[in-house]
Image 1: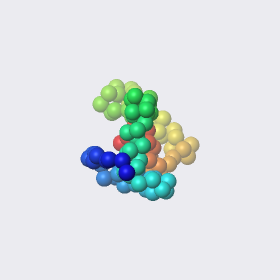
Image 2 (image 1 turned 90 degrees about the horizontal axis):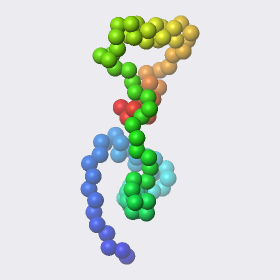
Image 3 (image 1 turned 90 degrees about the vertical axis):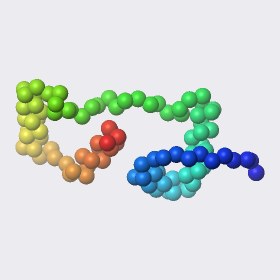
Image 4 (image 1 turned 30 degrees about the vertical axis):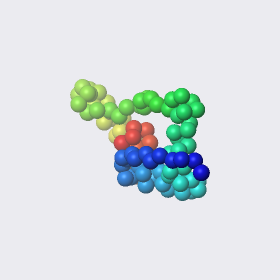
Length: 101
């Protein structure tokens, strides 16, 4: 058996739990997934996926002029009038997916 070394990492509990659920469905223990990730770093001589900032950024109220703010509010009101709405849960999921929030 190959000699092993320990790696300790601090991660947010929610992220760890979500990753464990996915890995469990794949039948891959967390330690194997970390080992695969490290092997890919070695093989590719870098992080094995693209790392970049999200293209979309949420609007920051403090960065808007009154006219821009009024325009954004009117867009939202127009969507409500047209029935273009979604649940808070959907918004939260999209924020996590798109912005890592």
